Picture 1 (cartoon, one colour):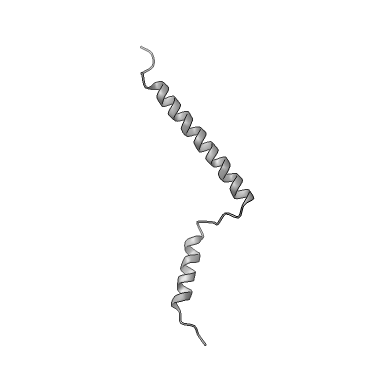
Picture 2 (cartoon, rainbow, N blue to C red):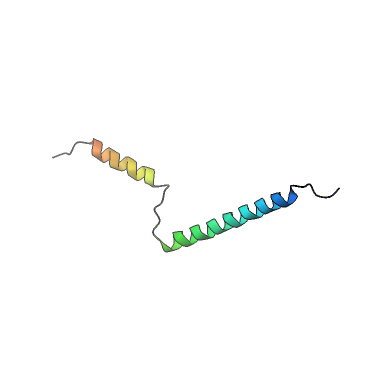
Length: 60
């Protein structure tokens, strides 16, 4: 019988996904090494600290 008619389309889509995924990772690694990218995992903690500091009345 051979390959189903959608096999070339599936292979093209998979190749496009893998190339995009790989290129995205390489660009991300380059940016993370060479630029000061903020750590998004720590951002919520910083925001919470800022909000807590604003809630507390200033002690004088």
